[in-house]
Image 1 (cartoon, rainbow, N blue to C red):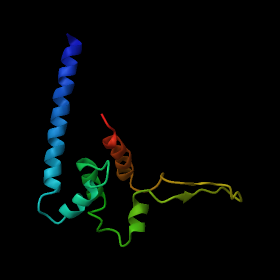
Image 2: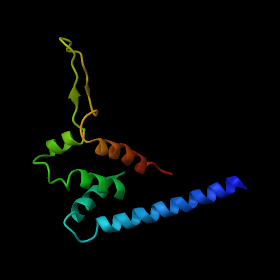
Image 3: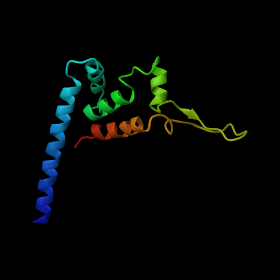
Length: 116
């Protein structure tokens, strides 16, 4: 009995989340100056409304950067070379820098892409 109620509640919550995501997508694609960017972002596999909204807000719809390289660095997508002292054996790694919310959007975007 408890398990059935939990499953029912889970289905209700999933339906509410889907409805909210549809509303957010409708708002993002409405006729305003950020709509075209939202359309481009959501055309990327795995990038849906929530991720698109966070990317647009964090970057002020890409208005805070002069170049794509600056945007990539801000998002933490540019490899960083780590060296200690005279050691030249450090490897380049992506991440650990940039906007923390955008970093979580990268991870969340992977979850959005998962098949159910």
